[in-house]
Image (cartoon, rainbow, N blue to C red):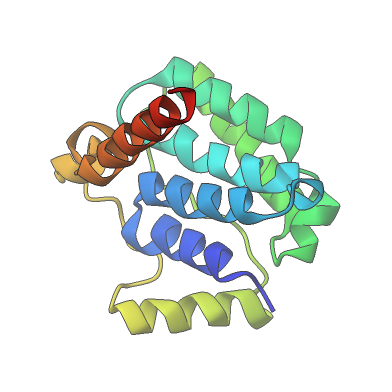
Length: 172
């Protein structure tokens, strides 16, 4: 009923509090869609995760920019179609944006979803992965906090190098 990427996003968001992975999984899904089906909603959800990633690291300016953009992209009706409580989600984003403006410290944020189907799918995924829904952020986990700097990027770098070589061979 829901894209697996959305379920994975929500589990990373609420169980792992791994906002970097939220971004990765949903961006990959968004890019896999035909261009005509690439809704701004997916980008808005990615921006929520990126905003929280920035906030948790103390980057208030970057976080506030992400939340501003997410608010512009998200529409309550479309959020409802994907199992979110649309008006409540937008309300929470506005509250967080104000907290960022006031430079309030990071705190976990939960996305309001309808329990009937989406929550059940998320809880099943948590059970499969042996993680707990609505966990707290581990603010001592340096890898989680600074994942964009600390992750293994050897596959990305190898793919970039291969693309450069392919372009050179085409030009030759």
